[in-house]
Image 1 (cartoon, one colour):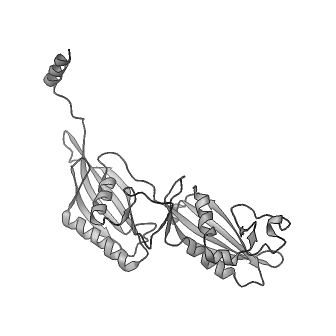
Image 2: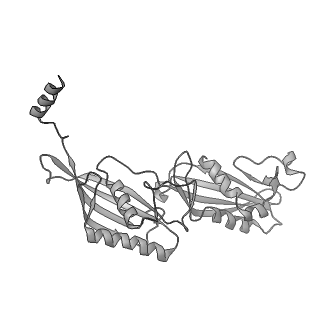
Image 3: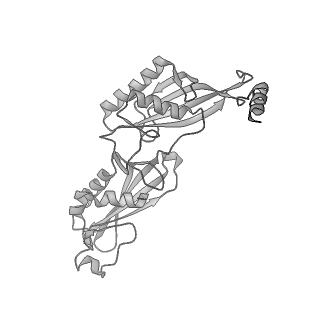
Length: 289
């Protein structure tokens, strides 16, 4: 499913919203487009309220560390008292969940604000804005420090989900399945310490642990920090070491947007590919002839 379809499914599967919303064509009145007018047969001659409309604005907001905004508008009659219940149910649909559509992601969601409004007549509404964060694959090129850290964490917590190692479903509940995500924040060439065959690189990696249980979150992320600090190195896939110079844990950081753990390391990359010895090359060619 694409992102819009997954969002629609998430809203449609909410038992609370099913019980609160009006019905259109046998389904809860939830729309990704403008709602049909009240003369359409789908309403069955009944009230078209309460109903929900939603849109996705995929414009990144660097200040809020989001890749887009999910805007959900709930409408109901002013004589109804369910508008706050609908808002609560909508927030619940996207709390502690990771959606992985075919067209991007995975995405997590964080409520940003709610704006009430009044339409002409007797209709009131709530516009609910939800920030969207994307955890896209961070693989670079071999030797890859992010891939190595992913494998390191997976060995430490085999049952945890690590983005980049494990296959995710379309919908994952992070309260049931803690999810690690490693993100490269900086990669710089070291000046003055390079050798004829090796160039040294400094990197900084942020580690997110998507887990709403605060006690479990700090226990797991602290265990990763202490293990890395004790080992002082992480072995890359080419079997070369990445030496760790700094391990910084911030338990107050927003784990959805910033990550709680920062790791700084240094690793080497070969300047030249290994060349076959000229004599051995001639011997092989002569044998083939």
